[in-house]
Length: 368
Ligand code: NPQ
Ligand code: MG
Image 1: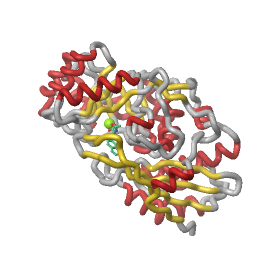
Image 2: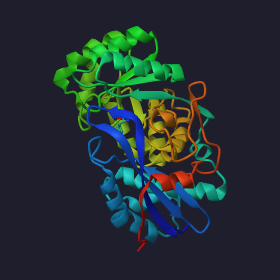
Image 3: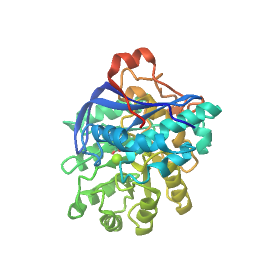
């Protein structure tokens, strides 16, 4: 396949409500879409990098820069390019997995569209719908949190994830557990704790949680193994898992017994599938995380989440969890599930009128 153009498309989507985590409060998603064309077809993907390097070291301007100056020229120069060869062509560039993932996914979408194959079939999906969980931000008060959680449960979400940090952990988790009974409940600290805080998390053992996601620093894999020995609640890693190799290492060290798979964080859907395969071989359940994707990224995540090892509900929420107007046909909740797209490739594309409304800028990247 020959790439004939690569375009970076920036759009801005207001969030339906502010989303607060231990590292930021967001009121808007500035998304970066990648559009590639080939002589046979075209492909879309979403780069999940945030505005600021607060979740991981990547951020959207850096992703655009590295694509423009380092990644796209390598793709354009590659002989006999296929989606399966994108990672090899980009391998000389260290890191920048979110940028690489977006390019690989756009090429994959184009390739699969040309052959009429849905991404879900290509990846080996075994389900046509996936259970939807929801990630609930830090709030100003417990009553406000209970209102929000109650609303999501009324909509049908099958699992609640509470963002926590020191000072917002025991009381909110206890209140949600007491108010909503045996709902599937888990936490995500986005690295807000240190090993010395382990007693704060130990108190949460009382609430029969599925797991704590990424309590400590991204690089503190050994610390997570130590924490796992101190707690009854399992540990799930997110930020620490950047590849199939790091997943295998974390499992071997006893640092996690559950893995959050985010294709952007690990360099794409092919590496995400390898993590799935490693985890299945080790008996570790995986689930699909989220990065406040628009319908473009959400569609591909739904396909991944339909693989057999994805045995826990993901952060694959409906579009209206975040956006009153999505850039694609919206994903809706049906009986607590999202339907996996059946169209070729990722199975969705931006609605031109909506894209025009949300557009912040488009940039044609030179191929040479
Ligand atoms: C997580 N996501 O699992 C993340 C982190 C996260 C759904 O909880 C803008 C863009 C804001 C990406 C906030 C969820 C974000 C973001 C949080 C990602 O750790
Ligand atoms: Mg997380």
